[in-house]
Length: 261
Ligand code: DAK
Image 1 (cartoon, helix red, strand yellow):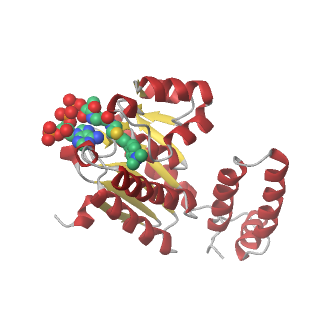
Image 2 (cartoon, rainbow, N blue to C red):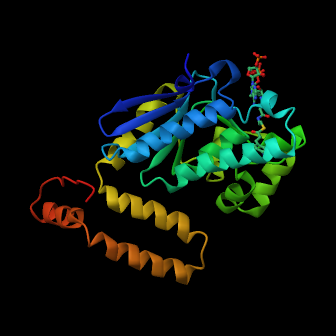
């Protein structure tokens, strides 16, 4: 097994599935897995033929059961800082990628695994998935943005309950609080994730990228500033051939053929 096998890559038309592949350790994230994931993300970001990404975990037990506890056990301050920076850099690649990334959560999404799902654009999950940020049980706090992204997504009080109890939650609870968009039977999850990815891949790539960026960026801004950014992004779409194609195709009653330009 080479280091690249730690994150598998499968292509189906314009959709790429990336699978974190360390099932014996429930796909826990160590330095090697994070580096492999980073390389895969760079590849799909640079490939203009790829229009949507599905991220999942190998096997039927885990999406990612967290950062690798064995690797972290002996870390000192500088190692922990390097690890957090590496992990945050990988998550930022997902956040800033100008393509949709769909998390297909097929089992445990704990700690760094929950944080990895949180940074994706849509979270779909199996009814058997389990979510949580159990870091305080290990004497640390979430280190890949979990305290911040979870609080922004589910609100301060619910996030504090999650982070400060370290409890593990069912897929139903994760959906109830808005973390998960849809639940699927385990055997149907990948089909549902791929079908969502294919649908997004048929839309205007520039528009998708702008929509993703403006939602992520706008959530960090006052509403009035975010609305101004939206207006500028809307106008940018009119610089593209895809805007002409999308509107012409509608008027000609045919499917649009987008090029991303
Ligand atoms: N790390 C390493 N190995 C793990 C692992 C993990 N997070 N989770 C599971 N494994 C390994 C187990 O050690 C076991 O290995 P063997 O004993 O077979 O060699 C194998 O996966 C199967 O796990 P179990 O035998 O434990 O399976 P069970 O069904 O009994 O339990 C479980 C499944 C998911 C409930 C349990 O494995 C579990 O509690 N795992 C740990 C979950 C967890 O606490 N995750 C959060 C990790 S902490 C930071 C940066 C990042 C972070 C924090 C700070 N900075 C640098 C500031 C992030 C931290 C985390 O993510």
